[in-house]
Length: 143
Image 1 (cartoon, rainbow, N blue to C red):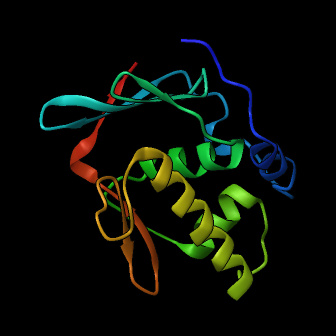
Image 2: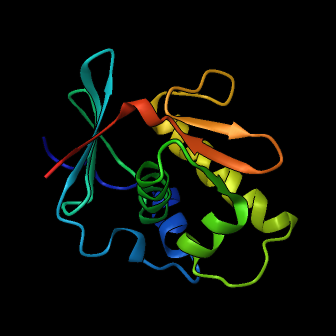
């Protein structure tokens, strides 16, 4: 499958990911396969930095990819806004309202690209007032 050119909005989002760090996926040599009803519905190729939803490749920005991988690696555990902010945005400051909104917007974009929504989550669940939890029973590690 060939890559489609990125839109101006995607390029702007990528370039505006200030204080971004790639360590949540750095040196990862494995694939995260997320099965849904015993089929592989979502596949994350960490080293290649590719995501597949069924047979279709999902185009994510660097930031969106890091958010998805960070949550998938902690499947079943609640990831707080602050933890996600520190890990993906590489900022040791406590996230305020603006930063929490940035986290929420990144999650919203990832959900949209995966074909889910806040009201009908399939992979990423909101833990109200705390953060997010990735569906635990869906993760299968393939090395």
